[in-house]
Length: 398
Ligand SMILES: *Cc1c(COP(=O)(O)O)cnc(C)c1O
Image (cartoon, rainbow, N blue to C red; front, top):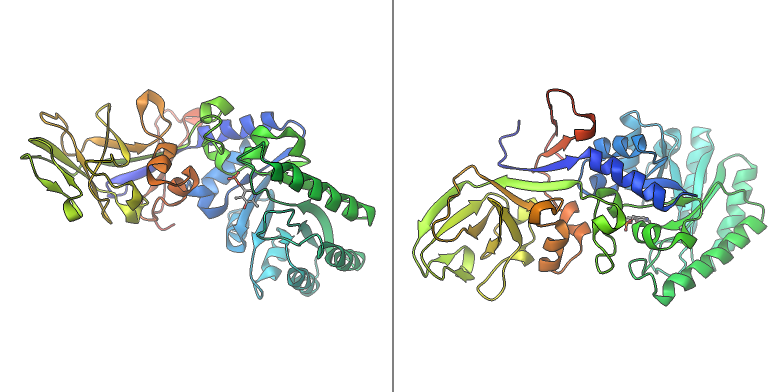
């Protein structure tokens, strides 16, 4: 077991249950579990395997290297990757049977060249920018790239298997752009199918649309954050409202507990000053471990929430690189070594990643994906628990 005094415990049973729940929300579509960014900080390989066991048939990753890592680990499910720069080793992706997004004219040229070099047909998903204004072919670029792709298909270099897009306001289901993007997507589909492409999968829905917009499910949904049990639409409902359970619990051990007098300035710049005689606790995780510095606490504004001995407390003073301080209160009974929960399932009053996001002015996605590389990920699996629990510790190298 790692000597690091904190860990991110990832519940693979929760991942499976979340994937089943998402599949039930989208009964007519396949599920692509989006496992980019080390499965949103939860551990690429264990999460990918759990998602596939629960019925996901595709995995989605932003980076080529992540796709190759899945293949190197022996995962044979369909994998789509969508962000690469000119000169990327697409031949490796083609050889590894990875589906490739084409989001710009140059990308098709490089995919075709790689397929010819490898001597194998590359499966391509044309990405259309239906209004997000980010990655993807504009509707004006689409016809020419489509024609070039269909010529390459006739020659056997590529197979156009997908058309896809991404929403700008999926987390606001009633926003007019959702409907507008859906219309542009439908027009692009009509064009692509009208010119003879036989698409295997049309896909548009991220977590928010999977949960709130059944009309946008098409053949495949691409949930990310919901796989990890966090709500993509916190203003509309928490995880439990959508049948989801947060999979990651971030916990640490108190390394110091000590009495201090009233008026003690706490942590850098003394942003918090003890109002009376009290006990301070030191929690050995800081912004290098993903604790947002914007969740620092002061007398005016409590910092990020902490569950200590069943009590909900908060970060006192500045979040440092490696540690935060908590005011345990006078007469606190905590001892060095006691467990502090930064976030978890939210059961029994504990804080959640969403609570941290609210304090730090961000989204839960950023809280979980930023848990630092040196924090060990410990994967537990109560559903498949062996008689003697043997948590699987992933290296802290990620
Ligand atoms: C990250 C991502 C997703 C998943 O988004 P969530 O909001 O986490 O469900 C889906 N599609 C694309 C293109 C993405 O980049």
